[in-house]
Length: 380
Image 1 (cartoon, rainbow, N blue to C red):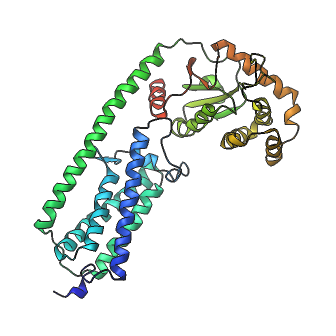
Image 2 (cartoon, rainbow, N blue to C red):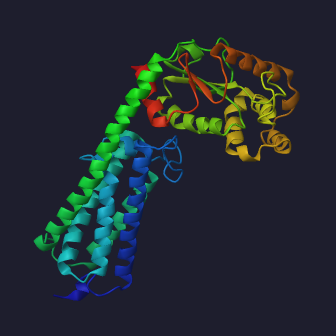
């Protein structure tokens, strides 16, 4: 055998070291994606994705994660990338021609799978998963090194193939069992949320339609199959979470959903129902957001993103940032905010956040994964 024709049998030279790094990258990205799968499909709270993996509606891992190829036989597809990355690292550090031959074949199959998934994502899903793309790049580069520097024959070696396959089946079975168990609990919990929602009193939509929309699928609020009214306070931490929660909801249901924002600052300077000021700048923040309905979404998002920095001084700076003026003395907007607060009486509003979904009141938070299923029943 001519060891010079091997990638890994000549020690940790430059080519082999690069292969080791690429294999490590494959495993690291796959671990991230596997964790993302569990966060997305079985969240502990509202959060369902990471900013690293979900940059925009196009550059997002969520569509891939939720697609039919998000799992293979009940196992997150990314988990197989963990095993392949680990196999590459073992190959790099083990002076074995048999292991190198098997790894080359596994990496060829892996590359073909990557090409298929990339095409499926671009053509069928209309999106690109950033971290998946990183995995594809690492995979193709690792395979290129194998094809260039390894001239060993391409064949499966039973003494390598059998142990690796058995280990892969065992580890995949463990992960698959976890997915199955979590899925069963998730279905039970979702069905419970749906039943509770269906049993709620129907108050009807708010009597006053807000001109401040987070999303509008139809011109008239009442015309959408899903109608959400968010009673919120800009200094309320859980209201911030609801604001973040609406982003993936809008992305999924954008053709069927209207979401309007209803101001309800817990600040006695504009809310007569408050005995004290829980949030001293909530009214001022509301005035800023209501200053220009065309800029409402941008201002709404910015205030919540910078919630911890809300102050009288910063609110004035933010007014300048968005090229607004007279926001804090605009009597028309102040009157509208008073109207939305009075609308809260229709629902016996006691706290924020409170969201009204097709006339039914939900106080507090529902994990997004369960809220999504409730909304799906409204479309059906």
